[in-house]
Image 1 (cartoon, helix red, strand yellow):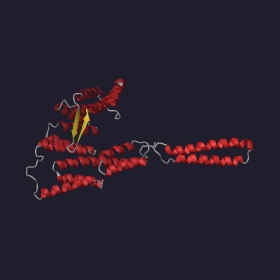
Image 2 (cartoon, helix red, strand yellow):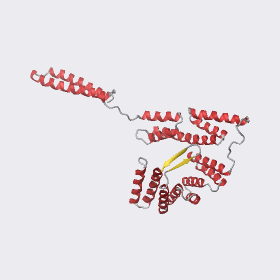
Image 3 (cartoon, one colour):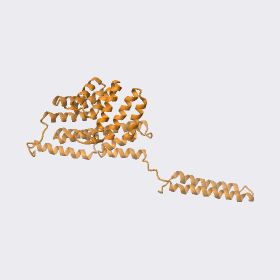
Image 4 (cartoon, rainbow, N blue to C red):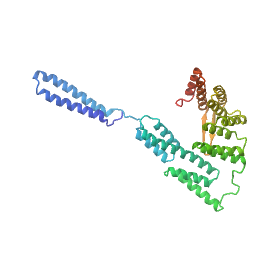
Length: 344
């Protein structure tokens, strides 16, 4: 058991002892001798209790829960060091907690949006660098520095961009045959990544423009159709979203993600039976795989079968609930909790 200075216990115990002694001294002057023994016994007893309370204060287990200030400082430090994913997680937890005042919550939300913006820009800049778009990468990295001047990693990346730009300007490239995004398929992939960047920033219109260019360059690019459908859902354009979701399914009918997207469109339209059918199809397809890896060009994330299915069960549960199927909805919600505890 860890020793600590607990002022409430120690202070209370000491005050209790002193008060007992003072009262005893005052009273014994006015009481007969026959009662003095009784008073002395009670005085000694309360003095012992007071000492016990004071000593106990030294051995109260230390509370390991981080204070409000500790959590905020931890998130700010992570942000300044460029650990944006961790900062986003911490700031979201702080915003959802009860110990934050409304004024503090506004400042934390502002910092959270900055972390999300920096994270999205960082992914986009790294992708541009990997595709040897050094000038664009440099400009994107510099946008991060405008928000977070203490990000040393980004400063190093800017220097790398400058070195590469100097090499190109001086004709010092390692080879004239360096891979470039010259084919339509490669260019389409770049525009799709650009759309993902704008989507992460919440700029739906710019994201759609980028996906339009990707599809124009590669009309068989099913991921671009699905991504554009998601943007149309966010804009409330269910007709356009449904057209793109149908196209994505036609191009890749064994992709559970495509059925999830179309299910979201049907939910949006109030066509709950169709939504339930699509979500059921997605679950069946996810059952046939172990995981899915997503890439935006700069980083990759892998989701397990259970994580994917939990998301679909939850969405199907919402469709069941809206359709009035309470038992079916409860079943799906429970499945989501079992597959991904703590998420739903």
